[in-house]
Length: 147
Image (cartoon, rainbow, N blue to C red; front, side, top):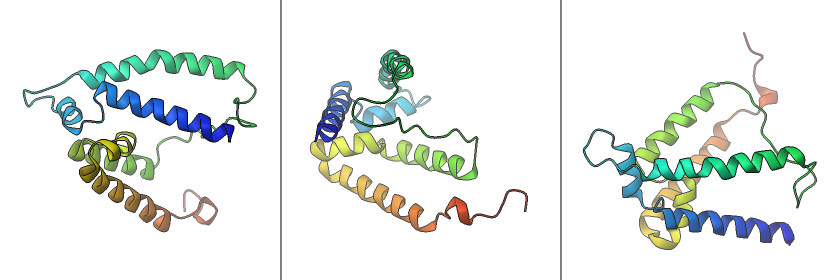
C-alpha cells in the first residue's frame, strides 16, 4: 500500500508538472521542434534544463542509500551500448513525438485534458508495445554475436 501511494503521488506530481509547464500541449512541443519554421518556442528547453538540478540531487542521494525507501533494491537498467533495436526505437519515438507532439507521459496526462486526441495516441502506443512484445526474440534464443 505504501509503495502504491508513493507511486501515485510521484505520478501526480509529474502530471501536475507537465500540465503547469504546458508540456502536455502538443502544439507547444511541436513549436519547440520547429526550429526553422519561424514559430520556435524554447519553453521545452527551459523545462528540461530545470529538471537537471533535481535529478542531479536525486542521483547523489541514491548513491548514499543501500536501497530505496519502499523496495529492497534499486532496479537500474544495465548499460549496453547501441543496438539496432535501441536506434530503431529512438527513431520511432522521435517521429511519433514530432508528428503527434506527445510522448508517453504527456499522453497519459492528456487523457484528462484532451481525451480524444490523447486516446488515439495512447491506443497506438499500446499497440506498438504489444507488437514489440510479440515480435521480439528473448535474449536466450538469439544467435550468438558474429554468426
